[in-house]
Length: 264
Image 1 (cartoon, rainbow, N blue to C red):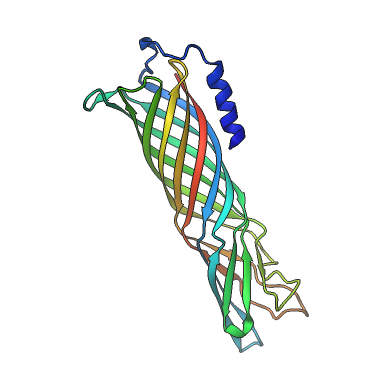
Image 2 (spheres, helix red, strand yellow; image 1 turned 45 degrees about the horizontal axis):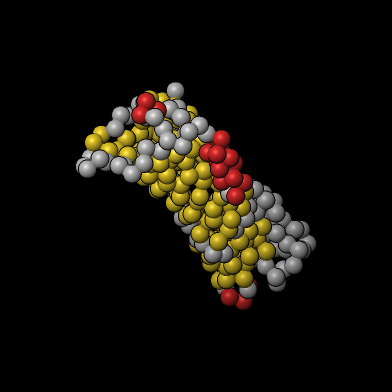
C-alpha cells in the first residue's frame, strides 16, 4: 500500500498547476480505471464433516466446528468500466454526480486456519487450513459529491453487488493425534460461487479534464461457501473415510485501495 500511495504522490507532484481551470470540470461519459491495495479478512466460522469407516458396517461420524484466526492479510487488484452522468444540484453549492460501474476484482491467495474441536471430543482438535483466492464481478452505483470547498478533491460513496468465485487449492486438515496425515490428501482442491456485496467510501482527485486518481476504503462481504475435499487415503496408516465437506461462513474483508481513472 505504501508503494501505491508513493506512486500516486509522484503523479500529483508532476501534475500541472495546482488549481484546475473551470474548463477542466470532468465531462459526463464513459471511463475506465485500475486499482490495487491491501487489507485483511475477518475471522469466520469453519466446519468439517465426514465419517470414518471402522468396518463394512460401522462408521463413526465426525464433526469439527470452530473459527479462523482473527485477521489474515490479503492483496486486492481490479479493473472497472463505468459511466458518470452530469452533476445534479443539491443545496448551498453542493452537487452530486451519479455513476454506474462494473468491476472485475481479484483477491490474492491467503491461508486462514480454523481451530476446530472435534465431536466426539476424544478425537481432539482439527487444524484446517484453506489457501483461498477469489475472483469477483460486481455492479456498483456511485455518488461523487461536488463541494464549495474544492474543485480538485471530491468525496464519494458507493455500493455494489455481484458474484464471487472462491477457490481453495492445497487445503490441509491436520490433527496432532495423527501426525503427518492430511485428511484431505486425495483431493485438497475445491471451489464454490456465492453472492457478494461491497460498500465504498473515498476521495477522488482531478489531475486533468480526463484523468483522476482515487483512494478509498471498502467493506466486502462474500456469502458462505461449501467445499467437498477428497477422502483420507493412507492405506495401512488411517482408516478409510468419506469425502469431507467443509462449510466456510461469510467471508468479510476490510480493504484499502488506490487507483487511476481515465475519462473518454
